[in-house]
Each structure stands twice: as C-alpha cells, then as structure tokens.
Amino acid sequence: MYDTVASIVAGGPIDDRTAHAAMNAVPATWSHVLALEGCAAWLDRERRRRPELEAVTAPAAALLREAAVRSLRNGVAAAQQLGEILAIAAELGVRVLALKGIARLIAGEPAGLRTMADIDLLVDGPAASGLHERLQLGLGYEADPRGTPARHLPSLARAGSLPVEIHLRVGDRARPHGLEMWDDARRANIGGYEIHVPSPTMRLLHTIEHAILVHRAARYKLRDLLDVATAAPGSDVNAVARYIESHRSHADRRAIRTLLAAASDLPSTDGCPTPALARPDGAVQRRAWRRVRRVARTRLLAPARADVIPESDPRVLVLSQIAQGSPVVVGGLIARAVTAPIRAARLVTGSWLPAEARTPARPPADGGLGE
Amino acid sequence: MTRVTVRPDALFAGVADGGVVVHTTTKRYYSLNETGARIWSLLESGAELDAAAAAVASEYGITAAEAAEAVGRLVSDLLEAGLVQLAEVRDEVRDDGPAAP
Image (cartoon, rainbow over all chains, first blue to last red; front, side, top):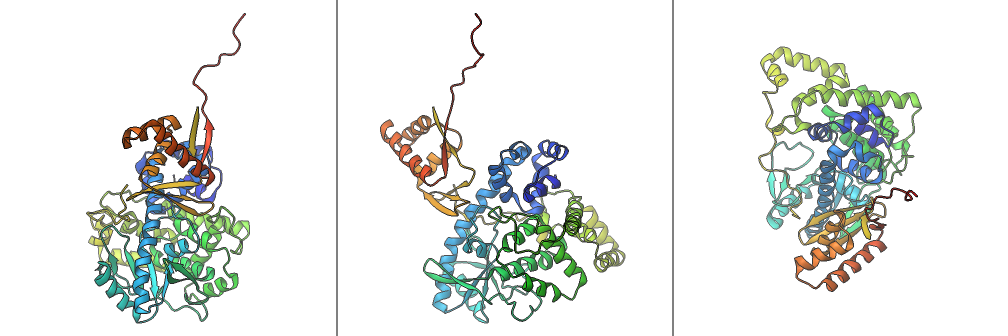
C-alpha cells in the first residue's frame, strides 16, 4: 500500500501487483497509511488528474475527497482568520511573518492540496506575548498550554476556527548568519494588512528543519517530501549547502541529504520537476528512496488503533527511529528498555500511551464552516 | 443530451453560506452562493442540465423556466472560468450493428 501511495506522489507508474493490492485493500488500510504519510489531499488531486488512478484508489476515494475538501475549507478559513489577526497586529504595531501552510498559501499555492491543521505565525521579538494576549481578549481565542514546545507560545484555540500558533523562533537551534527567517522576506497584503512571507530559500530551510528536527522521530513522511519539493523552486542551492554543513550531527546531515535527494524526484505543486534542488545522480537517489521506504514501511508495522493519533503513537515513533538506524538513538532505546522494562513492555503491547497520543474526545477544529 | 462535468483542476467545498471552488492550475478562487453551491453539487453528482434545473425549481419554489435560466447562467460562467466542461451523453441504446438481411 505504501508503494502505491509513494508512486502516485512521485507521479510514476504503479506495477500490476502493487495496484492489485491497493484495489483490494480495505479503506482502513488506506486510512492507516494516509494518516502516517499525510498526503491524502495531494492524492485526491492526482486521482482527479490521472484517470488511470481511478481504479487503484477506488477504496480510498471518499477518504481522499474528504481530505481535499477539508484542506480547501481550512485554507479559506485560515485566510479569514488571518485578516482578523493582522488587524490586531497592526493596532499593536507588531511585525508578523507567515510560516508553513499559511506561507505557502500566501506565496501562491492553491488551497486543497495539502493538509493544514493550524495557522503558524512568527512574531518579531517581545511583542509576541502582547499579540498572544490580545488575540485571547479581542478575538475569543483560548490558550492551550498542553505540549507547548519552547519555540512557540501556547496554541490558541477557538470553536469553529483553526488553532493559531505564535512562534517566538522557528527552531531550537541557532541558524548560521544570513539564514534567518526574516532575511529577504517579502511583504504581502491580506485584507488591507501587511504580512511578511519568507523568501523561497528560507521557506525551504524551515521545511527541512521541520521535517528533520521537529519530526525527528518520524522522518521522511511523504507530506514532508512534497513540502520540500514545493518549497525548492527559486531557492538558493549554496545557502542550502551552508545550512546542511551547519549541523553538527552527522546523522542529521545525512537525514537532510536523504530528504533532499528523495524530494528531488517529486513534482512541485505545478507538476514540474524541482530544478532548484541539486539533482543527485541516480544511485544516490535510489539509495535515498530505499531509506525513505524502509523507515515508512517499518513504522507501518504498528497496527492502527482508533484511540491513538497515528503520528503521535509511541510505537510508530520507536519503529521509525529504529529503522532510521542511528546508533545513538537505537542505543538510547535499548537503554530505556533495560532501565524501565515494564514501561517498555507496555509500550510494545500498546497499553501505555502518553496523553498527547490519545485521540481527542472532540474532533479537531475544522474551520467550522459547515456545509 | 448534454451533461456538464467538473474539470479535474476544480475542487469544491461547501461553506456556511454557499461554496468555494478553487482552480488548482490557475490558482483562482470562486465563491458560489447557496443556490450556486446546490447546482454545483447536482452537476458534480452527474445530474444532467434538465434534471439539475428541475431539482432547483422544486427545492427553491421557482418556475422551471427561472430554474433553467439560473442553471444555464451559472454553467456559462463556470465554463468561462474553466471549472466545468460539456459532454454529450448518448442515449443508452444497444448498437448491434446492421440488421441481418
């Protein structure tokens, strides 16, 4: 099933055996793969564009369409919310920079191709907490401190709206000089208010950072590969090389190179190849895809559970890390299994779950714009 | 018979007071009011133009002529925007070739 999804994302042919398996898979199997790879909306677009995929993806047709429609609806909701937020930021004189999905939308990517779960904004300096507070007082958002990393303030939630994350910085490590998010940012206008959008190079670096460091425990998702392929056009190859070399960890550098090599094989949003990535030779690219597939297939070994968010499932994360093969990580996991054997056994059997991995009682906010 | 089919580049989502359509190649967004969204849904589900107009007439309490005009006007706009295309539908009559002498 993974091979089918990966082949569709890469725009390549699907061999008969793989296609047969996909056609006969139950929707739950599709759902499991799509939840971990995060590319259902993209697959819906490919399904509409390529009639030969209709039969192969038939069991997942409703799932794919639902993801694409949700993505479009969320994109529309995000634009509306952003207008309100920027009005308050303007009142406060706060400089705001769009990140991730909302940055892609402002940069011209049409809504409906990628999942968009929240609105990520980077706010300049100490003004962040002032804006965070005003959004609660003025627009009715409520701060949810659960699981907040140091790089952003507690997520802001409001019924019927997408959550908003006000970032203080984009990552937990310092960037080399000249590679900061605000460098070369361009200005855009949303509803009469100004917002900054990162340059193509900074968008690509942030995408890489997210895929490799934030998603450290579950790297090489197809969604991340697509994000890199989409962010690559127009970016500066030399800046990317400098960024890679700034990582001290050999494993991180290798992971970034794997991500870039695999992503260079994918089409960008417009269906064009991604020329801005230094295209590796065939052997390097094949090796990268072998690694990507190994990690993805290994994490799929953890069976899906209705009460667990797949991408936060500790079994998925442990399997991913084992497949990534970093000796330090694998050694750490073995050490934890030795020092806390009961917890390790409960993790393996699925009876231990951290709170953040549990499916919320209510579904996440979905734009609130009912049909 | 003429059927209007949604082009692969077009994606529709219902919203509170109608719907929004994005053309993923031109990257243009279009909004539809409640009636327009209903007509889009009928066309997307494979309804022919006459059937879509009849449904609109019945659901909104307007005459058949008014409904046909509303559907025709919207389809014309959608065609111009490249969101739908026309397809001729053949009557489902078996063609067994020339009759035997």
